[in-house]
Length: 371
Image 1: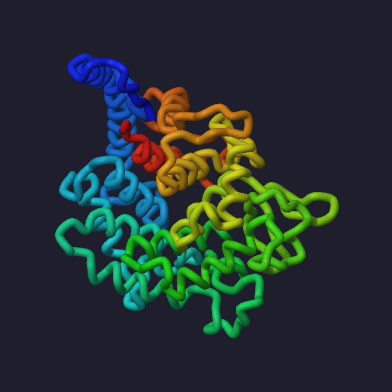
Image 2: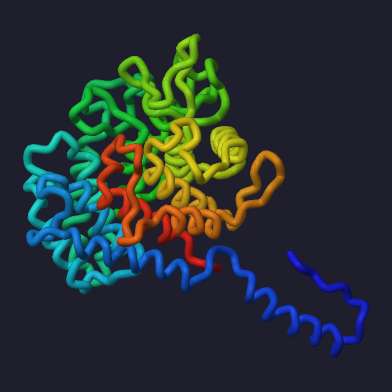
């Protein structure tokens, strides 16, 4: 922090301090506010052109995409009363099920869809309209968590996690959405559901410790995270010759964010190791470990995590301090198409759909406001 030496008379010191004020104000943390607003508005306006008459995007069955877009529109500054947002919220209301979940009736992605929709309704819940819906969704999500209800011991690699439902195992992506949704619902960090989820998250980290004694823990041991240790273990970045599951950025940020939501801080060995990994692998041109795959998912997780960590600058392993808000905004400005959308040329995980990639980009930008 800038400090003045008391070597001048009081009046001179005051004059220096006052003259420094405007200079400091011209160099805030983050991007130019006008540029950021322009990017957001263009993305929002693009989504106005692709919304169907029934209020959905992409497909009436794609509840997760519609939910993510509604959440992104709200988080990026539009009010619930905006015509597009209100229409999207109404479409999501049609997907509220009797069991409290919010998902397409024949969906295999009940956890993911309910988590995303809970976040959307939470962002719209300024007047308490959705309080009951959020509580019911919270209770539904608790029942989906892999724990004693599925006959699991706490030592099981699947314990505490959440999954899509179409696969017979939980994963870190779904579990991170579960933790975030519970937090949006007002659940405290020490709640049993979040602490159970923390057990699963810890086992997805390449870090051998008392929290992770899986067969994968020591094989890579770089502090990063992978997809799941359950059902034999999977990393979307592949395996090492010895069977170690390779770390990659989108899951490392998701894991780190989840640990912070669960009450851990920088003194914890797990958080420190994850922080060291992201310092060594700072990049915005790609999703480290996966290249262009999952790039926009990575952006929103990257921004959300660094915001939760309350970091204005991320110092990389070479000692370079990055104004990540400014750099991420500049990167997304390069990638925005003329029609206001974003799309990933590597279409894996539906990022070839500009509706989804644009939602991810808007969510990322919502954390880039200058300070």
